[in-house]
Structure formats: C-alpha cells, structure tokens
Length: 142
Image (cartoon, rainbow, N blue to C red; front, side, top):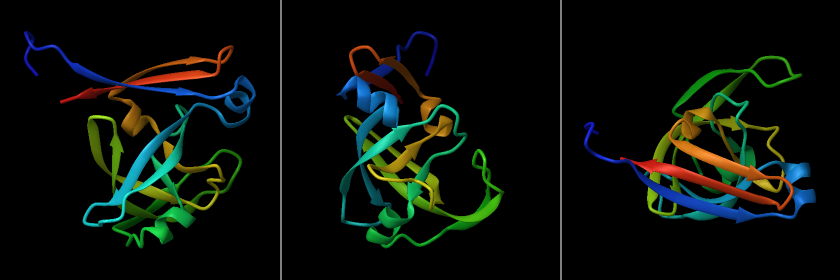
C-alpha cells in the first residue's frame, strides 16, 4: 500500500448478552476449512488479545481431518509448556480470507473452536462494549 492509498476495512459486528461477554469474552463467528479441503464449517471464535498466536480445538481439527504441518512449543497461562501440532487453515470473515498456521489446543472449550490471537488481530481494530454486549471487529483488507 502506498501513501496515497487508503486501507479497506471489513466490519464484523456480533451481539452477545453482557453476561455471555463477561463469561466467554469477545466472540465472533468465523468460517474455517482446510486449505485444500471442501468442507467449510461456521464456528465460534474467541478473541484473545493475550494470545500471541491463533489456535484450533482438537475436536475441530479432527472434524476437518487436518494434518499437522509442524510441531512447536506452546505456552498457556498456568500450564506447563507442551509440544503441540500446527495446522494450516483458511479462516473466512465477511470479505476477508486469511490462510494461517494455527496451533492445536486441547484446552479450547465449547462454545469456541477457534481462538484468534495477535497474529491475526495485528490487521484489525476492535471495540468491545461490555455494557451492551457488542463486539465490533474490523479487518484490514490488502
């Protein structure tokens, strides 16, 4: 992008009850698939600004029949370091598709199957209104 080009932003707005927002944190719906897969599933994703990377639940990785592309060390708060598989996936938001390597997380609990970390959030801006239960995320399109 040159200096005279403006960024294009895609807005996603999700409404949760304030109690759900407090209990689960900011949550958005995302479509996920294997890079070469045909099956696309709509799932709930937790937005976690404290997570360096994006993750996927073990159950969703199995449902999509994902094959690991690598293994790496994972640090989760309050838990010992583990070695976990990484999977390559496509995340689809309205008007934005992102291909990324995501870590397999056995600790990601329902209702979430995706955890969106700072590696994805670096190209976004977000407003969370806990009083109204509204999360608005805008992703920068290239």
